[in-house]
Amino acid sequence: MKLPAKVKLVDVGPRDGLQNEKQPVPAAVKIELVHRLQDAGLKNIEVTSFVSPKWVPQMADNAEVMAGIQRQPGVCYSVLTPNMQGFEAALDSRPDEIVVFAAASEAFSQRNINCSIAESIERFRPVVEAARARGIHVRGAMSCTVGCPYEGEIAPARVEMLARLMKGIGVQHVGVADTIGVGTPLKVQRALEATLRHFDINDVSGHFHDTYGQALANTLASLEMGVWQFDTSVAGLGGCPYAKGATGNVATEDVVYLLHGMEIETGIDLDKLIDAGKFISDFLGRQPGSRAATALLNKRAG
Ligand code: HMG
Ligand code: MG
Image (cartoon, rainbow, N blue to C red; front, side, top):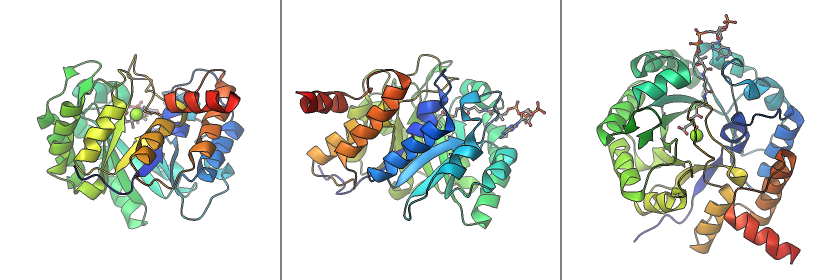
């Protein structure tokens, strides 16, 4: 088993994590979370999304949050942009990377972004072109690559098709997402294999929600294939308002604990990361959704 020596984590907590919160989270709290994540050594942070505030009210403060961040050199700040309107609105915020997001399932595409997969690709085409012309890196998120809340199991052929379409419009990197966390290692590996038919191993990441407790196993299964980039969420925050029942992303703390235990470098200070998770969990009035953080916080207290 040859595992990567180094792993890149994108903390999607401020975006995927908070988009699903019902209670208002002030921009100042989001900004503080981003600051704490970068202080903990995160070099990639998905900050917010430029989507319709009617669809996702929690992200309506996108520009304010981006403007409030004291940027650290070497940190990549990314934002979601579903269409040209979102991309143009994001430009003033100077994102280092934008994320276009599509689904391997037609039903999820309709529910999440109100159009078919084919229409979404046509919406993304000018976004990708405009971003790349400005030297902004373009990542693509591929939702429901294993299962869909509306269509059930998703065949790898669907994922292969979506990866081909993403590649065709110039998307530079794709994230293979298990949106509702139903995946198990072999199924996730099949979705990754389908993606790798169109993208290099260095341009593919895993994005695993942990609804069924499989995300760490799926992360290890991905590492075994040579995948070395993952989206994770501090304190295990997350979910998608259009994927009912789906819980948070795999907790960054748990993945860092796993990786450091296997002597894989992340550049992240686990103690500071746990503090960041505690900060946002305290604000939300709950315990961090990370087993490693809970264990280490108990150890500190004892
Ligand atoms: P639509 O209603 O079809 O859009 O929504 P439209 O073009 O017909 O416009 C309707 C109205 O929306 C207009 O306003 C537009 O100005 C406005 P009105 O004239 O009615 O006042 N509008 C916008 N406003 C702000 N920003 C924009 C924008 N675009 C249009 N960019 C749209 C289509 C895509 C906008 C909508 O469906 C939407 O915002 N969806 C976002 C859903 C979302 O954010 N989901 C969560 C993120 S994806 C995710 O979590 C999955 C991921 O984590 C991976 C995984 O786990 O699977 C990435
Ligand atoms: Mg997600």
